[in-house]
Length: 242
Image (cartoon, rainbow, N blue to C red; front, side):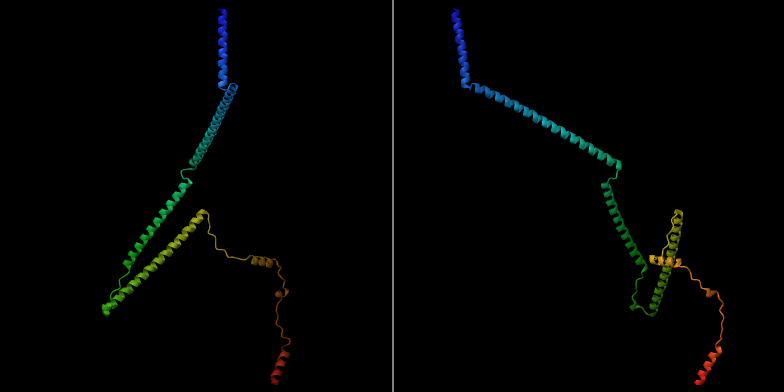
């Protein structure tokens, strides 16, 4: 009985060995083990590569996050600097200047239009329409001429009064300007005459020259006619010779 059991155990071990051998032979045997090891190594390398890629992505994301933080800080600093400068930024100043120029141009056009309208109104009031001279007789023409002469005289008088008024105002403005300059301590510079540098140099040289002493200028002049008789005799001879 014991021999039978031992024989059965031996048969079972042989069967298991043969089955394993058949498995090895059918699926490659030792080569299959090598392939499994290579696959495991490739899987490990792939996992390591994935880990490295993940680490690189994490580093890139961290770098981008830091750049974004720096960019935000710079933008906040620039905004704070602009806020410190005041409400009027260069762009707003430019827009405001443009609006002011447009408003000034519109006001100028409006003023010119109003002045032209006022001028036309005054001309219509002052200009007398010329009557039909062909249908007038002598008395009416004389009367019309007198009216025009009177009108011309009145206009000339008004022109004289206006000129006098303007001169008076100019004088007052000049006096007030002088008073303001005196109060501020600013004096109006007089108009200077242009003098060449060479003339100034020549004047200096002339001043440096010593004056010549003339002794004869202090002597008394005496009129002496010692040779008057001889001259008269010569004249008489000449006259007698004639």
